[in-house]
Image 1 (spheres, rainbow, N blue to C red):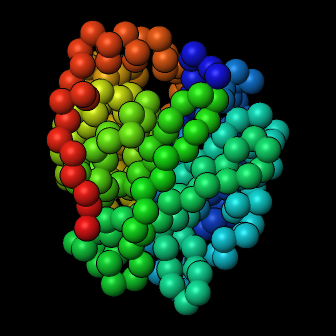
Image 2 (cartoon, rainbow, N blue to C red; image 1 turned 45 degrees about the vertical axis):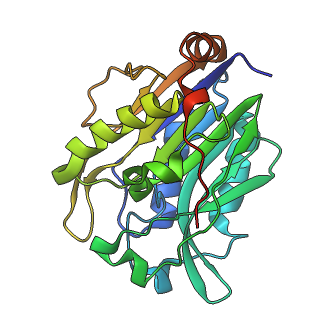
Amino acid sequence: MSEKLNIAIIQANLHWEDAEANRKLFSKEIEKISDEVELIILPEMFTTGFSMNAQELAEETESETLSWMRKIAKAKSSAVTGSVIITENGNYYNRLFFVFPDGSYKLYDKKHTFTLAKEDQTYTAGTERLIVNYKGWKICPLICYDLRFPVWARNTVDYDLLIYVANWPEKRVNAWDALLKARAIENMSYCIGLNRTGKDGDGYVYNGHSAAYDPLGKELTELDRSDAFTTEFSIDKESLTKVRTGLKFLQDRDHFTLN
């Protein structure tokens, strides 16, 4: 069990629909990360950008990108997570991989496909939430549009860390900022949101605003949030436990079942 979890997030200007170029981009950034880092977080669709061109871009689950993630995880002795376009049984998925240092992995298929961009017409929605147990931390990784749906993220299992990987456009970044903070507070959990920067092939502009919040909604990463960057920080289990013990809000949560 790790009382502190050392995390690196990489907010990047993605190459449009160019998996090889993006893997090289992230390989270069990951080389700079210290050996103390235990979790590396990459954006949504980090090999392509948020593309609906799934037929041309999709990889099989046991893909070159997953192999790359495994190599990175082993080399850095760190877990690696982010989402990519995957094809399986004739369907396409916006699929997040959480790859452990030993090469094993868990996966999560995005539940809320973004209807405004017709993501729902291209990608099959997931049906199961993922809780990852890693170094004594319970982690709930979600994807972009999931952020707008608090019921899906509701902390009914006492997870410690909520993660959103995203391609969230500049024009709606105020919602991104507000909802990330709200998810941390309402779930009494650390919450990390990792977005991208730059302009994609469909003309959408992204200005990052990646951030991490503690369970009281205090921002942990005070950065120039609009530029591409790689940064490291730690979250602390003792501090989380102290807050939850002192403020027993989770014990008063509503109980419900999702249909």
